[in-house]
Amino acid sequence: MTTKDLKIQLPERMKDLDVEFYADFFMLSQCDVVCTSNSNFSFIACMLNKRAKMFVRPHWDFSTKFKEFDPWNSQPLLWIGDNKPKFLKNLIDVVYVTYSTQGIGTMLKSIFIYFPLGIIKGWMLRVYLGYQTQSLIGVIKSLLSILSWHSVWRKL
Image 1 (spheres, helix red, strand yellow):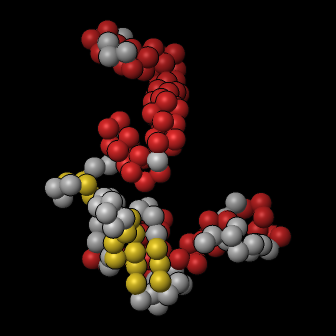
Image 2 (cartoon, one colour; image 1 turned 90 degrees about the vertical axis):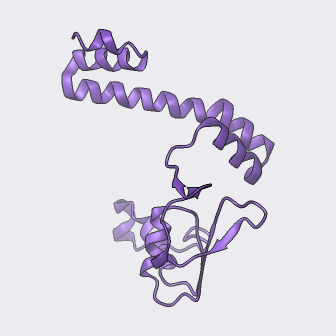
Image 3 (tube, one colour; image 1 turned 60 degrees about the vertical axis):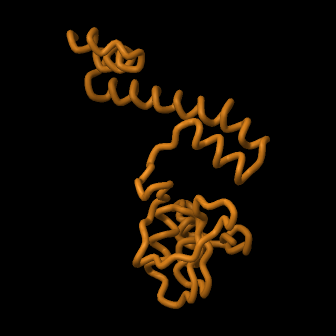
């Protein structure tokens, strides 16, 4: 449930502040039973919750899908497999998790739309930051780095 599901309206003076997330955060911190995503946002709200009797979140064992956890005695991020953190997912992880949790349609969207868009956005960010730090030389270095021509850009 979110504030939109409950049709909660913020006071008019707060409409321009873009703080709708705070009401969701507050609700998570006040629930008796909390079922969250694996995000830092919800994890911190659980840590601030003094009244909940149970906290539940998804995990990688898809036979049960959800697992009870103690926010004060757990890792805030997903841990995959042999207790090693995995912050970046490769394409195989994306395909497996998406297919297991959301079906073939969303899996195909992940492969052909979301994954390539993520790569392109990363490239655009690198070029933009290159421009911000070193102007045109930074853009050229960023583009050469994206193309894996490190030996060329090191000479610039």
